[in-house]
Length: 342
Image (cartoon, rainbow, N blue to C red; front, top):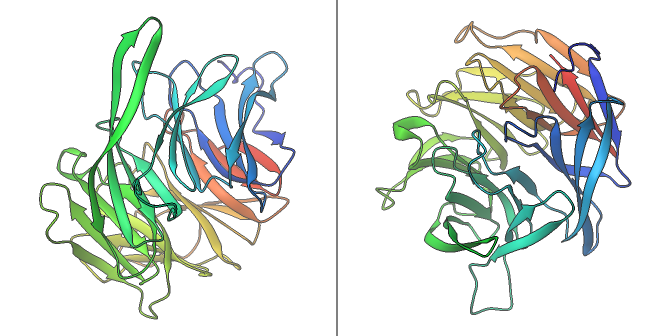
């Protein structure tokens, strides 16, 4: 899709509800496609799949499907070559894997770790392993992380059957776990980190789950809500505290001491996204309506100011940097999705 002829810098889509979860499709043949999750404080929620129409250069809703409760995170299968089925995952009460067709999206499997209980501990987040797309990790308010194995089964007729099983479940924190992310270090398959209500960042290795490493603890023991690994340099990760106005950059080689603090936001930060193609650029987004892009090359010298700032028309609650097209960042605020050329 060549949008360069049009040279529009911003494309906007208005959903019929507040948008919370949102992410870019990764497949090479579906470039300007995103999934959006509604945030409605009741059982009935929705997910929409939207795409940029080349002719009109407007976003078009291609598909809407029902989702129980708001989805806390949404991700497309990290399949840059387009060799796996076109799958989408959402977390909420459970982890669900959906299969996307041109006309409809259907539930492929529901991954439930509490087989013997009516109670389910809601999932706060999940991550899909880029090196091995058959691995996913979920984080839960029940203090655990679960690593799931996915099987794309034999083709029966024209249907690939997708199923999943628990590879391992571990108590990751003393309190609720709020986010999980696989690291690209050591082959990119076995290392992951998590953050939670106990204010710590912990790192795990699937090959040695008997111990974990605490990389950082918030000085005030404020809950840490998000973590995000640098896409090019696996030594760096970013995290942020609940209601915090700054993003902390950590270096795993120097535990417990931030190498940088990005603190120009004037209200609480809601989202962090590293550039897919550069080790020194990161975007942060906050309730002050701002999306800021930072160049952190100067570390460990203080990073005073962002290099780019965009002001949206509302509090930005999510930001995603497109992994397959690094010129584009997506943000959402209120009921709007915007993609910005950077």
